[in-house]
Each structure stands twice: as structure tokens, then as C-alpha cells.
Picture 1 (cartoon, rainbow, N blue to C red):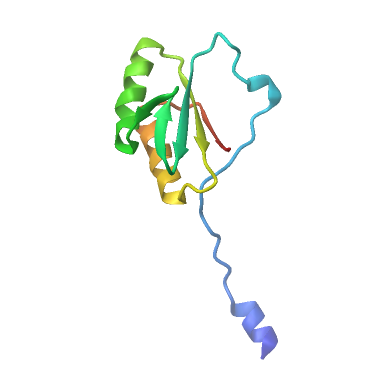
Picture 2: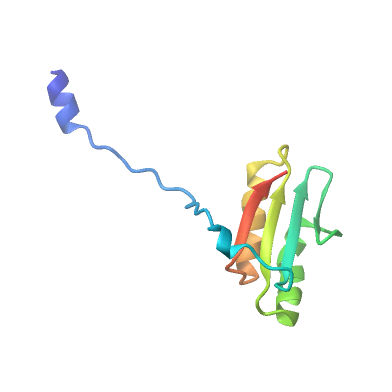
Length: 105
């Protein structure tokens, strides 16, 4: 009977967010524009300027219009809820920024 269950059981593949680690050669140089998006329980900011979670897209879109090769770096505090981080990632993607990284502080 155990063999029957092993043979007939189907294994579902879990889907999730793909994570890729960048090589050291892809680290932005000082002349490349980077938007540092800091997420914290006390508030959020882009390059030190306060911003609401829903305002990330519009601020990044303005920055991208001025600097088309803009990259983004999401810095998430350890106490930030995963839902907040996911919404921030969605805001970055809606601003049409394809090159971004996520890290914790």
C-alpha cells in the first residue's frame, strides 16, 4: 500500500519569486544613477526624501524621465512586513525600472 501511494502521488512544483544574484562586475559605478529606496516601519524614503508607499512609482517615473538608465536599490528593514516589500517591488516595476536589487539593513 505504501508503494501505491508513492507511485500515485503527484508532486506539485511551488511557484515563487525568482532570485538571481548579480556578479560583482554588475555593481553600479558612481556615475550610474541609483535610486536608494529605504523601507522602514517608521516611514519610507527615496534618496533620503520621504515618500509614501503608493508614491514610489510616480517619484521613480520622474527620476527615470530625467535619467533613463536609472537603477533602483530597495533597502528593507528587518521589521518591514513582506507585503510592504512586495508592494514596493510592484511600484518599482510599474515605474518601468528593470534593473533593481533588494537587500535588508
